[in-house]
Length: 311
Ligand code: ACO
Image (cartoon, rainbow, N blue to C red; front, side, top):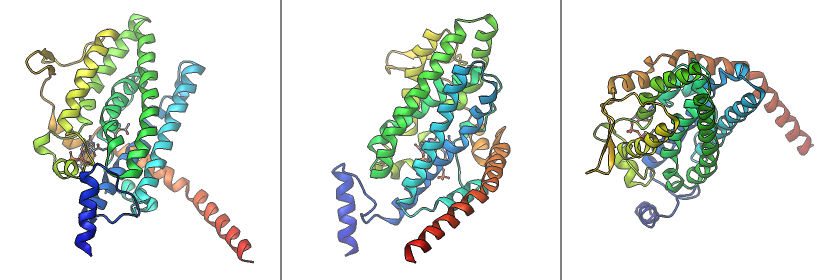
């Protein structure tokens, strides 16, 4: 009966085991999971744009090869995640349609422009660093296909983070102009990176239920704090200043205190009003429309193969 199934689901969660596609699950769990996985997939795909912007202008063949590999990984992550959404009955075409019509979200961070090559390094260091901080606990998320996808994705994100830090190290050991470019980029990306973790806990409608279902393992504020604590010593090693006069070690808490986040800015970017929202979604729409012939050709080929098999 329905209540037996529900009990089995609750038990699986309580025992810290995984929910698998074959298992019964509450409709609300399915909906939340598809929402989070789809938003995550969209973020990976849209996230190709800000850095893709620098592929043709990378300063050396080595930097170009690294950047190409990284952006290609992001495409892979997106496709991998859409596949995980499909195990819950999400339809890839439908999810893409929702993204390009502005009905589904993607991470706020990708709505900021990349103004210099230093941004490639800072995105690797801060944005991918924040992504790792948020995603490592998701390797233990209760939905099996999502948790397993996260393992590979985190390994690749860790390479992305290191390439960013290594690039910044090289620039910080370079000319004064290069050091200034890094500092300018850090000034622009620090606060938006903190916003990636989402609204504060008392303003996060989904956290309580997602924690109860063990989809999320930590709250938004816990992970944001972890990221700040992890990043401060890295900034010191690099020799850059994080643009927050209130940033200070608090011995009592055993954590760094930091200044107030501009929540209005996050709300504005999430609701479509960030500096690059329109451009990002338009570009994705154009790519989707330009790719229609590929999808049609693939479908025609599949039909032909099927007919041959039947003949
Ligand atoms: N950018 C855009 N939307 C956001 C952001 C953000 N930085 N933070 C929160 N939101 C959205 C939520 O998705 C939610 O949307 P809804 O209208 O569909 O409900 C709403 O704002 C309220 O936030 P929360 O209640 O805190 O939502 P949630 O519990 O889902 O937590 C979080 C948000 C932490 C982003 C979570 O979904 C998550 O961990 N997702 C997986 C990681 C991910 O998507 N990373 C993408 C960026 S990293 C990368 O791709 C390199």
